Image 1: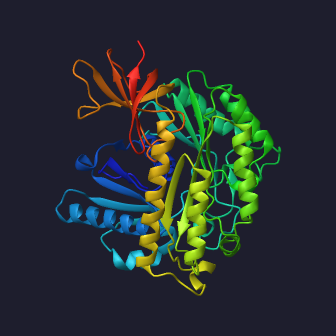
Image 2: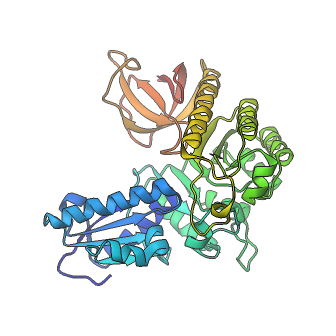
Length: 429
C-alpha cells in the first residue's frame, strides 16, 4: 500500500486466530512504514481482514464491508481495503459488488521478521507456524484459498516467541491449519516436536504453550510424550474429528474410521491423564441419516469430551461435497446442531463438577465489574482461564480474590462452584 496524506489506519480482523496473526503482521508492516494504527473511529483508512471458510463467515465479512462503506459515505473514512480469504476467493465478484472499496488484496505473503502490532491482550498471543493445508477434506475450501503448505522456519518462529516473551506474554498459542504437518516442507527435517523443544526452552517468562489444530492421523507418540512431560505445555489437545460414522468420514476424505478414532482418544487419555480434549463435529453433512446422527450423539455421550464445538455443514462451491447427493435441509441441520450442543452442555456441566474442591492454576484475563451471584461482598472478581481453556473459544474461571490481581497474573484457585461451561472459585492467599 502506498502511503498517502491519510496516514492513520484501523484494522477489523475477522475469523480465526490465524487471521489475527495475519492482521498483526499487516499492521506491523504498515506501522514500520509510518502509518499510525488507531481505532476505527479515528482512522483515515480502514482495513478488514476477512474470512470465507463457511457461509456464516462470509456473511460476517460482507456485513463488515457494508459497515465500512457506510462510514465512508458519511465522510468518516477516506479509504477502504479488503484483504484475506474473501477477496482471495471472490475478488472479481467483490469488485463489481462493492465499487466503494479502494483495494482488494487476497492472500498476503508476510515476512515473519516484521514486528507485530498486537491485537490481543498483552498477556497472551498467537504464533502461526505454518500456512496452507496438506489435507483434501471434501467439504473444505481452505487448501484452495491458502495455497500450498508452507512451514515458517524454526529460527523465525523462535525469534517471534522470544520477542513476545520480552513483551511480557504469559501464554503462547501455537496455531496453523494443521500444525502436526509442521516441517513437512523443510529441508532440515525439523518437525513439530523439534520446533517445540527449541521455542519452549527460549521463552523465559512464558508459563503456557498451547497447541491448536492437531490433525488426528498425524498425532505421534513423541508429540504426546512431549505434551505430557513438559510443565509449560498445556495438557490440552485440540483435534477436529468432524464425525464418527465411518461412511461419513470416508465421504469427508478424513482418512480415519470410527475404530481408529476410538483408539486415538483412548491412547491420548492414557498418555496424558490430565488432558482436556477439544474437538469439533459437522452436522448435516450430505446424506447424513438420522441413524448416523444418533451414532454421533451416542459417541459424544460415550467419550465425554471436555470441550466441543459443532457446525452445520456449509455447502461451498468448488468442493467435492457440494456436488454430493442427499443435501440435508437447513432446518434439519439446525435441529441436529441444537441437539448435539444441548447434549454437550450437560456433559460439560458434569465434567466441571469434578473440579469442585480442587485447586487449579489460573491465568487472569481481566477484572469483572458485573457482580452477580458469583460475587461476594468485600472481594474482587476476575475472569481467568485454566490450562484447559483456550482464549475466546472455551470457558472461563471466575476468581474471587481478597487482593488485587491483574491481567497475566497466575494464581492458584480453589473451585467452589460450577456453571455449564465455567468454573468459580477463591484465589489462595
